[in-house]
Length: 526
Image (cartoon, rainbow, N blue to C red; front, side, top):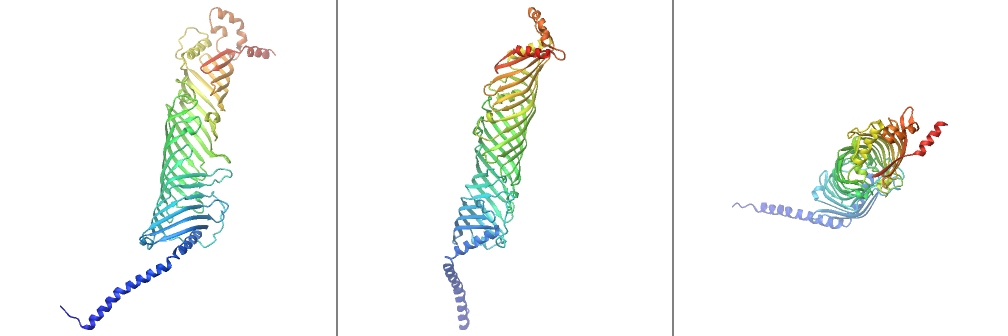
């Protein structure tokens, strides 16, 4: 054991006292400072937060309350945050938050970028102004916000409203049940995971992707991308339709020009006036204006049974009215008429078969009416190689072909018919300005109406035959008809008989219109 001199031992004790008491004194002074500053800290911090937000976003900011705790973790809580952008005071507040809390470790605020672990927002509402809204010059010099990183923001129950650019249109509103934002930072896109209830048709939408960076100058140019699923959408909310729809797809672009590619699947799609449900699938490409919800379809391919129908057009809001107007150009090149009739005709068995070519303008306005009552169609069609499934009707068609050519006893079980026409559907009534029906030896040209609900036929037209009227039968009937053959003959067309078709679709009544026949002869003589 080595003994130090007395002077060295006393110097060591003095240094030891300094090592003990200086830190203790520093801690005591820090504690006193915290006790003195702590009552004022929320006031100073609140003023700093308000001033920073106002200068950063050129806005007027209100903050009702802000509280801090610094042990064992830094935690901030507040309520009543309202942000109004300068020059847009006539619009609702850009953002409101009913209450919020933030939580992190002390060292997270001592480094760059600032690191906040979690934020919880309640009652978050964001109202995006229309693109092109006038803005006033900043009230203050714009502050540069330090780089920061937020791990997670939870904002369940958020409401996002996008105000329309066109006057009179209703705003686009999203009520988001679950919203999680991840890895939020300065000038970088945030990652999101959201679940919301679609209002019409009602169903659950889940989406995840990236959003931003936020374009404060033009919110509509903010980038967005991701994928979505849409489940259990009940189509019965549209009167006249039924079925549960599901959809999935991807999207990308800017908020006011979102390109969407997706598909839908409805295993039990049905129309009220039609027959049994069909399995309906669609693939679509669309552009969505996220600022007002208007959608431009380009195109949609719908497949059911053995047919495909293609549609292109737009779904857009009407100023001053709730809902959307659907305007489409619809075409089908090789569809089966029996598939189309299964949707529109109440019958266990489609009344005819054949290949149809269809072109139509389709318009469906908003409103609570049944789909069939408000649907508007105008177009034309060609139906080739058509055969009627009712044997009695098909036998009549075959008999018409035989008589039209003046032959008897020929087997015409292979005979098929060709149809063509121009139609308009309005108020559940289908009107035909031109409807032609042709078989070997005969042709029918009609005009008239058909009620989709009543299934009532009311047509007038002419039957044209190659043979003379007396040649359409045999025996005494043929002999008796020979004197009136000239009444029905036309030099350039053969035998022409004015006819009418009336009654129910299931039991149509065909008859010669003698009044029109003799009236026509009088006009010819004059």
